[in-house]
Amino acid sequence: MKLIPEITAAHAQMQALRRDIHAHPELRYEEERTSNLVAAKLESYGIEVHRGLGKTGVVGMLKRGASNKSIGLRADMDALPIQELNGFEHRSRNNGKMHACGHDGHTAMLLGAAQHLATRHDFDGTVVFIFQPAEEGGAGAKAMIADGLFEKFPVDAVYGLHNWPGMPAGEFGVTPGAIMASSNEFHIRITGVGGHAALPHTGHDPVFTAIQIANGLQSVITRNKKPIDTAVLSITQIHAGDAVNVIPDVARLSGTVRTFSVDVLDLIETRMAKIIQSTAQAYDCEAHFDFRRNYPPTVNSEAEAAFAADVMRSVVGDDKVDANVEPTMGAEDFAFMLLAKPGCYGFIGNGDGDHRDQGHGIGPCMLHNPNYDFNDELLGIGATYWVKLVERYLGK
Image 1: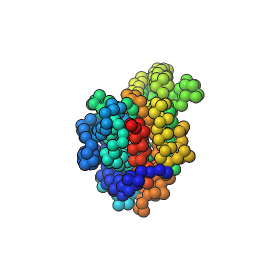
Image 2 (image 1 turned 90 degrees about the horizontal axis):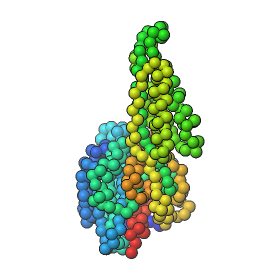
Image 3 (image 1 turned 180 degrees about the horizontal axis):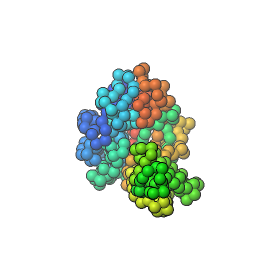
Image 4 (image 1 turned 120 degrees about the vertical axis):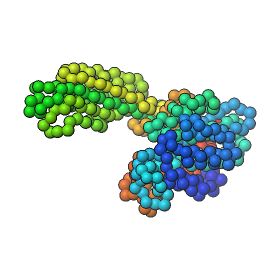
């Protein structure tokens, strides 16, 4: 492992910053303290700061030399509405809010890289440090782009990094093409004619109809899409009725669809609509179908993925980088940035949870889990990766 000595020497400083952010989590578009902290740190490094993109987003700009070449580095800042179960000293001070996805670590790593790069003059071009709000369901990347992120800072490529529990600490994973899935939700309302459960023939049962729809929708996955096209259709909620002897007027189903391509997503939405309407009609009910496309697939451009993998190898060695890591059906709004610019999103292993301080919760150290904590041993590795990415991309 080849870490930058100055970054290694600054580990305690990065750790203190990360744990301070962890102790003061803020939800999407509420990242006032966090964005103030980020802006103050960037300014103290002598980096030009811009604020207000995506409401609470922060952008730092560092230019060296005369080249017009530019690279964007992105970290997310928001926390989750989860009650933390850890009891260690840096646990959340904000009830019902927790950095359960490691955005505190992502922010600290990028700030560590920014501090180091601010002292360097051996690259030629512009580094754009993007500290994004509202990744957790708020589409903060989309909001920053809508506020002119890439018009004001026209980077040639943009890169992101996320810690990954279960992957050995300090290892990297990346792949060309789709690395994370699209995130979509659906809501179905079935309206029938209720009545006494002992006299079902006098009405039109929306519960029975909803069950047939739920079964029928799985045929989209097993019979309509190609078997080699990965997709998930999960019904996660069914709500109907208040009494055991009454057929209700309405039944509702909700769930999620995940795909690695928009074409497959189009197919699934179209087939869902037909099955829902036809099934409801067959049982003399009416159906309302609401399909919401939240995040598109996160798709790495081939050249940038290869470049990122090469830089990763220079940090941790060839055997610690999986350049064809298995994609995940989780979703990430960095996808919006990759729709706008070439780039790459990668994973850095967070380990199996043994790193957690005494007093952690007894549950697993997984993302979106109340027992999670970011592995501080990654801070120097991630910061070194960012610096080497810049030095290679903007090398003189």
